[in-house]
Length: 204
Ligand SMILES: [Ca+2]
Image 1: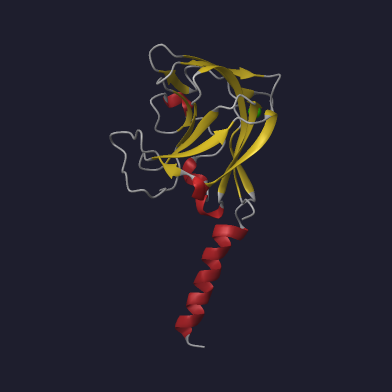
Image 2: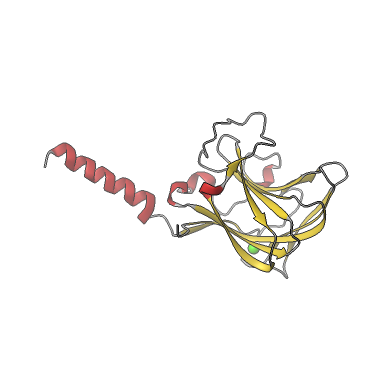
């Protein structure tokens, strides 16, 4: 074997080892254990729609509390509830791990717990990447109570309805992801709870 080949193999083992074997099988991004207020959650709604965000200590899945969202959405209105980094609300940077410390390529899905109400509505779950581009996954509220929702990264699509002005819109999910957000999409009133936002290795 030539020295060059041997080096290539050693290099490959090192890269593979650091990318996969040494990364934990899952990593918790956020389980909403802080006080949840206007200072720690970046949220809001368009005129006429309303939103109440708080911690709930009764209905929860990870730790002592979950993120509770109580909303009233008008037709053609919008709202958002976000946590992470580079948001307008700087105190929302309260993940359990820093974005740059996560080996994003070692995982293929985001898992989250959602408390559904079988409303027939949909909730958009967005990831904002390193350069501000927003990726969307749609969750159907077709169940009651807690359910683990597995969102494969390959099934996120670039939002076409809106992107931040300064986003680098290259249609590549550039790591690290810096924030996530929820957006209830069904007009009317509703309540949702979310908990246990994790990166996982889902079975293909
Ligand atoms: Ca929690």
